Image 1 (cartoon, one colour):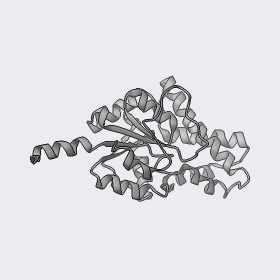
Image 2: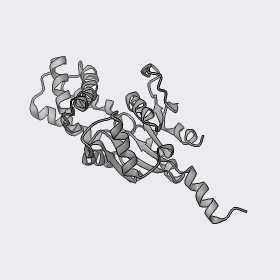
Image 3: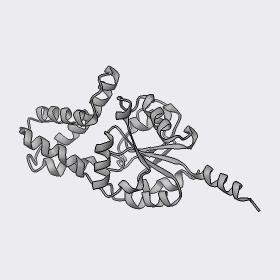
Image 4: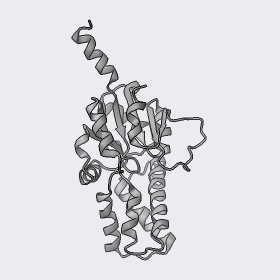
Length: 236
């Protein structure tokens, strides 16, 4: 019969550190379309697509240029570009209203149940984001899921962005875990590729079947269609 030390070691080996990307993984950024429709219903979807694309592009460019500005500034500048590109005329008050709405984005439908199961299984859960700690804490609290997480790991601590390898090292250093016991969970393929390249396991949440993975020869450890499938994947 195994002793208590053996049982504890077995339990420790099964326990994983799960680092969840926030926007596009836990939180649905596309719901901002409803807010944009209040100002221009016809161009709302187009504006939001450009806004999200530029938001990420600006983080990549600032990371390469070593000209860090936090995710909030990248978001504001991306909105300015999206308005110019779509010719949607918003004043400063209206733009602020849209930026503020980012704090109240909802979680995807399966998130609460999935996080509950993972927490009950004894895994360590962290939010891991390009956003600042305060911004991430606010959006998770408003979405009703902040309490599931042991902590928030923000790139703001090292002043650069995913998928810089330094960001994933920052995750390991902050959570004090081994690479072999750490999973990144993300709906963003660039984040998954960055994590696997660094040496982490990664689950790609491919909610849209039409989205393609970049053909770089770097594959996710697991590809799932919703967070509800993660529990069985990390047991393998």
